[in-house]
Image (cartoon, rainbow over all chains, first blue to last red; front, top):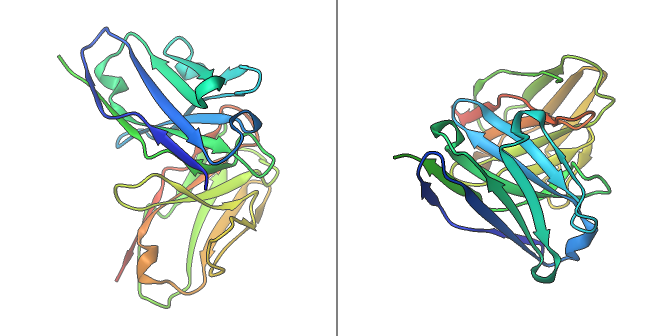
Length: 120
Length: 107
C-alpha cells in the first residue's frame, strides 16, 4: 500500500536551516507529484508548494518562496523540503502529501507529519 | 489568493444525525474542491475530491455537493468514529487554500 514516511521531530535554533524528508513506498515515486503543507494552531493548514519527482519541476506558494526548497532523490524515492532562516513562526507540523486521482493537487496519501520547533 | 470561508467552526450533533459543513470560495472554483478529515493527532485524510467523488474506502454516508463558490460536505448518519476536524481545500488555482476547519463532536 502507499506509504509516506516522514523524518522525525526537530528542535532547531533561530537562524538555522532544517531538511525534512518524506520516503515514498508502494507506488512508482516518479508518477505522482508531491505536495508539502504546513499546519499550525493559529494559521491552520497552508500549502507550501509542489514538486514533480519525475522532472524536478517545482511550484511554490509565494508566501514560502525563499523559505522552502523542495527537492527529490529518485534513487531512494524520497522527497525533501529544506526550510531556511528559521524563526519561531516556522514552528509547525509539516506534511508531505501525494497528488492522486490524476491531479497533482488531490492529496490522496499523507505522511504522518514532522514537528519542527524553532527555539533558542 | 482564493479565500475559503468554512462554517460552522464547531458542530455538536447526535449519533444518527444528518450533518452538513459548508465552504464558500471568494470566487468560482469550478468544482475543484476537496474535503479532508483529521482525527486528533493524525494526518488529514482525503474523503471527497472534486466536489462529489468519494475516495476509495470512505463510507457512503459521506457525500459532497456544490458548484461555483458554494460547497457542502454531508454526513447522512453521524457515527461516533466521525469525531474529527473537517477541512475543505480548493485546487482551482495556486496557491491552494484551505478552509479554517470544522470541529465535529458527538452530543
